[in-house]
Image (cartoon, rainbow, N blue to C red; front, side, top):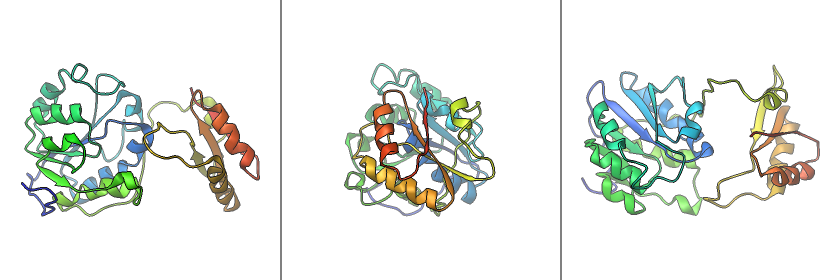
Length: 248
């Protein structure tokens, strides 16, 4: 098949589809519209997600997923730590895979699993393992990440559903639940990031928090370990004091 060919491919009536997103929390959350889109258009299909162990809890019990498969480690995929992944995927007899994120070693393992239809972005070296490629320019930051993910459904003829959702099967941290106001709209702002793209300045996050607060939203500023200074910088820039939560 030639790159950029988005003519819809036909899959079995009860196709098994794997969605691959082996990176961080934020990007996985922005991948959930893909699950909703597939489930809405093809409710008879079985949908599985391949993610890092650290984010699996966000998807366990998700209403649009039948299965969550995890890599063996949260470390960057390599030749040594994907051992056994191909055999595991081969047993599940997937009909198609959608690579929302192009990781070379994960894509290599999926290729070895013998999945017939392999869709992914026409970028990075990993594209050699895909037989349907979609040209994207994510590094320019001109489009929302969720829309870039949804573009990869075009070869399946599936219309986009722009709704994000997560499922959390475990209890939330007490310091976070204490900041959630029942009966209110609650929005968490997480200014930290993994360094894969440019980040907003603290003042921009504060501007967003103030705008949400003015519209009756309960805002919670959230950070991970080691990001306390960033959290404080955003908090100081806010016109109104917001709850701050550090999740370990």
